[in-house]
Amino acid sequence: MITMIVGEIANFAAYAFAPAILVTPLGALSIIIRHEFEFRRRLHVFGILGCVLCVVGSTTIVLHAPQEREIESVSEVWDLAIDPGFLLYAFVVILIVFVLIFHFIPQYGQTHLMVYIGVCSLVGSLSVMSVKALGIALKLTFSGTNQLLYPQTWVFATVVAVCVVTQMNYLNKALDTFNTAVVSPIYFVMFTSLTILASVIMFKDWDRQSPTQIVTEMCGFVTILSGTFLLHKTKDMADGMLLSLSLSLSLMSLLRLYICIDVYILPGVSPSVRLGKHVDEEDGFESEGILLRCQESSRSP
Image 1 (tube, rainbow, N blue to C red):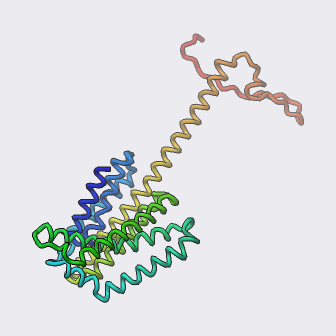
Image 2: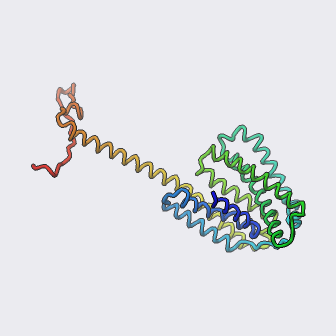
């Protein structure tokens, strides 16, 4: 619990110093840590490949991420937030979220995973933008320029509180209703994609980059997505291999027990009781089942 709290605080601080298009995809690295230390299971060979893909994709994004723009006041972030392009995005997101909550969730929430994930991802993209704005305000405040006097800071803080509560509520419902191995990769993909889209619209990250850098970032993002899906799929493969192995061992144990009973416990019982002595009624011949015997090397011939 302590490490999770520290990790969330560090994640919050990262948004104040780096673009969201860089910070959000790096969340794939936490999947590797969770597989290694929380689940404590050996990775399948494809799971190892998934880890490598996540690391390569994250490195690619880090090397080609845009520079953080210089912001000297929370009022500048507010001007970016009320830009017509981002206002249109926020309006569309809120409209879709209300439709999902009041129309689709009552009817399809228990059967369709994308309903809950859609709400979490859409609201999450707005929460990340607000978290970044609030983080910038706190960073400037700690640097000596008090931003708590601006009403925009408290507006961003309110948006963060509302969005985080909504996001966590529907994410928990998704995890309670559906398999975590299915929820996690889909949520990661949708949340990261929408966050990158919101960051590009609000902070105009791609305006300061060349087409080559943008394409390279997208390739790194796709590489991370591939590694994420491999990690979750191979977790199920490992569970299935363990289940098959346990069933095989159980069957072998039962067979061994049967042979020992047949040889050592029931030596005097007639073959007709043990392995089915039967008579072929049509041909009139009597046949006996073949008995399984263990070769005892310790007995003299």
